[in-house]
Length: 350
Ligand code: RAM
Image (cartoon, rainbow, N blue to C red; front, side, top):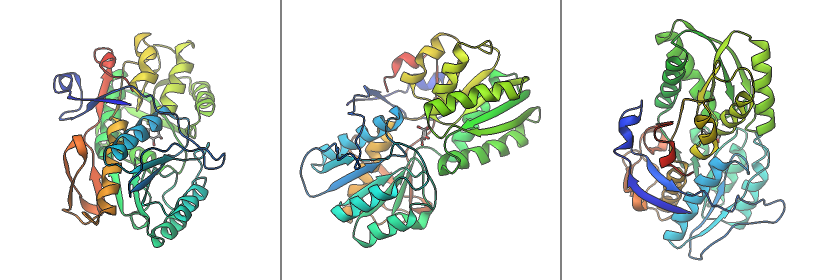
């Protein structure tokens, strides 16, 4: 994976969300992950620090990109990298992978959680065995990990998506949410805040349904079809998951609802490009998943080295991304969400 560390100050002018610092990322050429169950692994380098990335599930381009960012960081600091994970994003599917990593005595685990509680016992055991635990993307309960790497504030992510749908449907009418797994910490936090934002500032938008595609392409596709059938007056869908929005766009692009039912949410430019170009989607948001994984790997190293403990005010340097400060609840913030549209989508490759 190659990084282009050009800061996209010029592109910021196109965004609906102010103040971003998104880094363009060239290529999503990771090996797509591996499974502890099938004995596969994706390792590199040597060194004293071993870092295992554990995404919600394998086969999701979002995590391919985030974990490739992690691999780049681990290679920079001379550690050894591995990615493992389950096929399905279900609450406790990650437990065997956590147990294996603990038995292997890895220095750090970097995890995106499918459930805030279901993996906590396994993480506690790993930490007792000396493994540092960093959550990224989707957190556990704070007591289950050493540090959480947050892609953007939950409030900012929620508002960006509500602003987009409001703009696309004239701030009035029925909308639905197509989410990821029902227990996903990140999506559930964003959905709660989207509801607050809708009721505070968009009285004429009515959220009529929330459905769950489990971050599975086919399930998300089917749930989109069912939503349209159940709500004939639907004017828009927000899908706060890269898997969901891509599946929904694929469904809409060949349906009679194309162009009449708006779709926005969180997507990767490479998955959404054709749907922006064919008019199915106008604009959607995200951050740079590669930067998120890169930051998480450097945070793991800082914990392992004892440079930080997760206390508020701790600082560490994350390679090319520069210095970061630990905030409340032992969390570190990457930056702001970014809005992609027809004017800028070709500037991105991830
Ligand atoms: C999916 C996953 C991930 C989320 C993105 C936006 O890839 O659910 O956790 O952050 O969407």
